[in-house]
Amino acid sequence: MLKLEKRPAPSALMAWLSPLLAVLLTLLCGVMLFAALGKNPLTGLSVFFIEPVRTLQGWAEVGVKVAPLLLISVGLAICFRANVFNIGAEGQLVVGAIAGGAVGLYFDSGEGGGAGLIALVLLAGAAGGMAWAAITALLRDRFNANEILVSLMLVYVAQLLLNYLVHGPLRDPEGFNFPQSRMLSDGFLLPNIVDGTRLHLGFAMALAASALAWLFLSKSFAGYRLQVGGMAPAAARYAGFSSRRALWTSMLACGALAGIAGTAEVIGPIGQLTPSVSPGYGFAAIIVAYVGRLHPVGVVFSSFIMALFYIGGELSQSRLGMPSAITGVFQGILLFSLLACDVLIHYKLSWRK
Image (cartoon, rainbow, N blue to C red):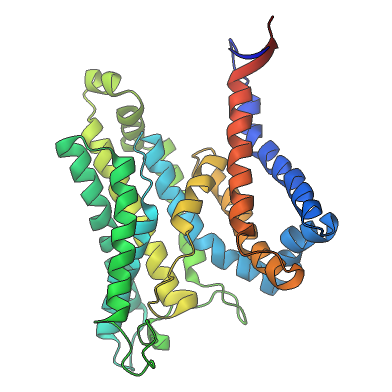
């Protein structure tokens, strides 16, 4: 029978190459999936992975999806490196969108706006995400509650709060009873960085966040202390480092980045608060963080792959008649492939009688 045996020395090279192998396995599974659904596999892969980047407009749309995924995955990479399993970034994104959107609607009188007020809206979004993340950090710190369950359950609370607000206090009185806020004026929207496209300043902010996170984790003593405090609490206590500080720092940083991501969606491509501010960016960013090997630079490339899944999924629905769940299927295949590769890096299959 086949059994798994632990390898004496896992390959460091394969550990870094396994995300690439996982992407290749995802492509192979995609070929089989399209064939099983009666579609031409080459046409399906072309629509899914090549069509989105054929034009400048396509690249810009991919960038629009990269922005929230990259912001959130950078924060999650910090959390996971500190051994804090924050699964509720989706809720922090939603509350950040609520806070930033509400501040924007309060100050938006149809005139004015500008860089100062946009910065204020983004700060409000960051504060909202931090406040929502702080609930999980407090319950973990004071009562040793499991942060996975707490952060995940808070996602549903955040979504219900958003639904209440867009159906009630923040609903557009001239919106024909649709559950949405009024549109923000141009002075409160993020400027586009490529003319004629929807690619907004949030993309540049995400790249800047990735660079700053890399500097923090790899070049600063505070980042080193955070990683040691999370991954080796006993060693951290011996060295005088605080695992408590690692918990709060990582959770608040992730909450702030997720809140900014949500606010950037509201004052970016959407332009208003709606019940569907996010199509699941907070959950998809978990896969992005692990495919990027929890590295602030690695997640830049993995967020691009995940953005292709979103755009390619939309194109395959309109051009090939694929179901709306196709994006989630590809996300699941990628995660499963990565987990399988990681298992085989640390274990080998052996035949025993």
